[in-house]
Image 1 (cartoon, rainbow, N blue to C red):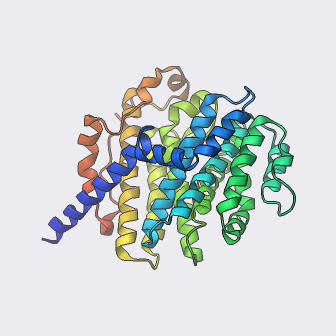
Image 2 (image 1 turned 180 degrees about the vertical axis):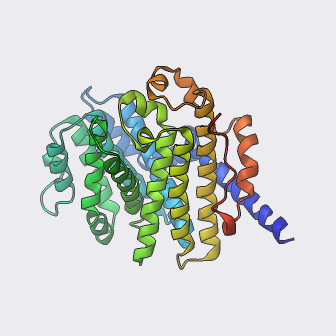
Length: 356
């Protein structure tokens, strides 16, 4: 009877998560509609600031980061057993835009590290106008979203985000991942810090945080970043970006490294002094994401004849690496594993095939 009740609970959680992920991954879904409605005026003004130097994909990137920030905020509120307030959602939307623009200035506009650090210092300066610092169109758009954020965020929350200043620099330093001589140790550090600080920033609305909670949030962000790197295997390989994957020797090696981070993250969440159901739901959601990413990794391995050859991958058709998580095949192979989640035995997950 206990097993039946547990599976029924998992099915309910799965349906809720599936709805959330569908609407997050669909540009016509609820989350994209919501962030556009909330930030409509700011979006319109940002487009007017474009002098032709900002490609349309940057504005799309901002929208995706907005959605991702709201999703992360919902996950963190679920973990604490609290509800996400309306103003918290607005804050998360503009925090997402700020993080997107930081990434765009580094990855797409390739501003030098010195200029990026100037922008970072100005962002958290308590004196002077932010917009007066902007020189280019992309910087003016950044200041626009920053000023909008500062109008609605509480001073205590902004101060907490500023406290992550040292780690935020890791997002700027991530440009080093384009270098051919960067070490595996530095890539791992940058990966965990980039994902970790993004999650910490999104936790600014959570009151009375303890150190163990912050560490769990940080490691969760690192885990999510590693899953994102798995999804972006093809894109990063073609762009010359080195992630932890590019230091792996095989597809099983990628999976095992990701799984070790999953187990570490789950252990930290499980040990938190938070409501049992809240922890259960968070672990369930993260485990479902892990299974879906593992499925995608399995399909990548299959397309590559189970050989992790980056030169070959760079020459392959990108369609081999476009896996629809809502396809009938993905649902067929993943649903059973997802709804069978057992928090008392989270170390063991039914793995997919990664080698011949």
